[in-house]
Length: 217
Image (cartoon, rainbow, N blue to C red):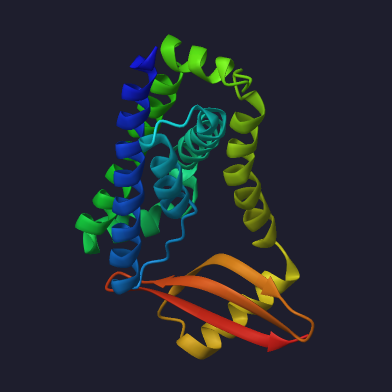
């Protein structure tokens, strides 16, 4: 009855590796002035540690987390072409072919590994051990839905922001501060009690950079 421990250990090792690779890529992105944030790295390492010890109690949690992550990453891949103007994608591919390709390949690799993790945790021996330990096992539909919404909702919000008066004001400030030789793509806006901050990707045929503007409310 201990055969369930083998897939748990395999998944544990893979999750720890995913977390470590994600941490390394995050450092790479920061060193190259690229915008990158991830909730996957630390969670993957922690979950991997529990599974490596063969704990059935971790199975439902990791199954839900993997379902959430699969839906989130797949939604990101689907929305990827719409995250930026086609002109900006073309310029980035010409100026930064390696970093852009690495980013896409990393996302595809993570999706494949997460699907493998999910499949491993649905092996009969693992499901049986989890149920015998008193932990319910069912398809995590809510996790899949929440994972998709985690990616889709911010995408919808930022697209709506681009048509707002605040975005127009931010664009004027960006052109004043950084010049008209760039085109500007809004990537985020933050409001505090006294000021507004907007982030842009500024680009032309020779350069892509991240810029910010802020003003008093």
